[in-house]
Length: 94
Image (cartoon, rainbow, N blue to C red; front, top):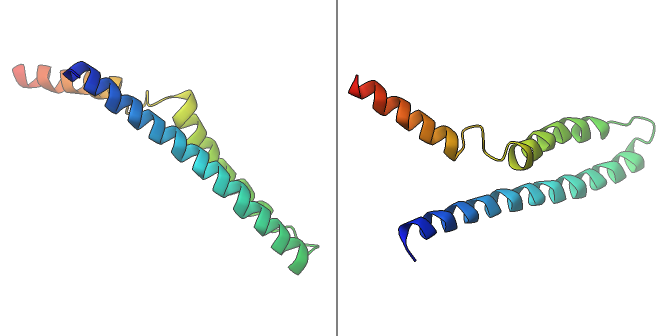
Protein backbone atom coordinates (compact mmCIF):
# COMPACT_ATOMS: atom_id res chain seq x y z
CA UNK A 1 0.00 0.00 0.00
CA UNK A 2 1.51 3.34 -1.01
CA UNK A 3 1.45 6.55 1.02
CA UNK A 4 -1.66 7.92 -0.74
CA UNK A 5 -3.66 4.76 0.01
CA UNK A 6 -2.42 4.82 3.59
CA UNK A 7 -3.69 8.40 4.01
CA UNK A 8 -7.06 7.47 2.48
CA UNK A 9 -7.31 4.50 4.84
CA UNK A 10 -6.52 6.68 7.87
CA UNK A 11 -9.14 9.27 6.84
CA UNK A 12 -11.75 6.56 6.24
CA UNK A 13 -11.00 4.96 9.59
CA UNK A 14 -11.25 8.34 11.35
CA UNK A 15 -14.57 9.05 9.59
CA UNK A 16 -15.94 5.67 10.60
CA UNK A 17 -14.90 6.33 14.21
CA UNK A 18 -16.76 9.68 14.15
CA UNK A 19 -19.94 8.08 12.78
CA UNK A 20 -19.73 5.23 15.27
CA UNK A 21 -19.23 7.76 18.07
CA UNK A 22 -22.42 9.56 17.08
CA UNK A 23 -24.46 6.35 17.05
CA UNK A 24 -23.11 5.36 20.46
CA UNK A 25 -24.02 8.84 21.74
CA UNK A 26 -27.54 8.46 20.27
CA UNK A 27 -28.01 5.00 21.81
CA UNK A 28 -26.90 6.18 25.26
CA UNK A 29 -29.16 9.25 24.95
CA UNK A 30 -32.19 7.09 24.21
CA UNK A 31 -31.51 4.47 26.91
CA UNK A 32 -30.73 6.97 29.68
CA UNK A 33 -33.71 9.15 28.84
CA UNK A 34 -36.05 6.14 28.90
CA UNK A 35 -34.77 5.36 32.39
CA UNK A 36 -35.16 8.99 33.44
CA UNK A 37 -38.74 8.96 32.13
CA UNK A 38 -39.52 5.79 34.10
CA UNK A 39 -37.94 7.21 37.27
CA UNK A 40 -39.85 10.45 36.78
CA UNK A 41 -43.23 8.78 36.30
CA UNK A 42 -42.72 6.50 39.32
CA UNK A 43 -41.26 9.04 41.76
CA UNK A 44 -42.91 12.36 40.82
CA UNK A 45 -45.62 11.79 38.19
CA UNK A 46 -46.91 15.36 38.22
CA UNK A 47 -43.58 17.12 37.68
CA UNK A 48 -41.99 16.34 34.32
CA UNK A 49 -38.36 17.10 35.25
CA UNK A 50 -37.03 14.45 32.83
CA UNK A 51 -37.75 16.90 29.99
CA UNK A 52 -34.85 19.16 31.06
CA UNK A 53 -32.05 16.60 30.54
CA UNK A 54 -33.91 15.35 27.46
CA UNK A 55 -33.93 18.84 25.96
CA UNK A 56 -30.45 20.01 26.90
CA UNK A 57 -28.73 16.72 26.11
CA UNK A 58 -30.77 16.67 22.90
CA UNK A 59 -29.28 20.02 21.92
CA UNK A 60 -25.80 18.56 22.43
CA UNK A 61 -26.78 15.52 20.40
CA UNK A 62 -28.05 17.78 17.61
CA UNK A 63 -24.68 19.59 17.48
CA UNK A 64 -22.91 16.21 17.41
CA UNK A 65 -25.14 15.16 14.48
CA UNK A 66 -24.45 18.40 12.60
CA UNK A 67 -20.70 18.06 13.08
CA UNK A 68 -20.60 14.45 11.91
CA UNK A 69 -23.19 14.36 9.11
CA UNK A 70 -23.84 17.92 7.90
CA UNK A 71 -20.51 19.72 8.16
CA UNK A 72 -18.45 16.51 7.90
CA UNK A 73 -15.38 18.14 9.41
CA UNK A 74 -15.46 21.10 7.04
CA UNK A 75 -15.01 23.20 10.14
CA UNK A 76 -11.52 22.43 11.46
CA UNK A 77 -11.31 19.49 9.06
CA UNK A 78 -8.64 18.43 6.56
CA UNK A 79 -9.45 21.21 4.05
CA UNK A 80 -9.26 23.85 6.79
CA UNK A 81 -5.95 22.44 8.07
CA UNK A 82 -4.39 22.49 4.60
CA UNK A 83 -5.59 26.06 4.01
CA UNK A 84 -4.13 27.22 7.35
CA UNK A 85 -0.82 25.43 6.73
CA UNK A 86 -0.53 27.18 3.36
CA UNK A 87 -1.35 30.54 4.98
CA UNK A 88 1.31 30.09 7.68
CA UNK A 89 3.89 28.95 5.14
CA UNK A 90 3.14 31.97 2.95
CA UNK A 91 3.44 34.28 5.98
CA UNK A 92 6.88 32.88 6.88
CA UNK A 93 8.11 33.32 3.31
CA UNK A 94 7.12 37.00 3.30
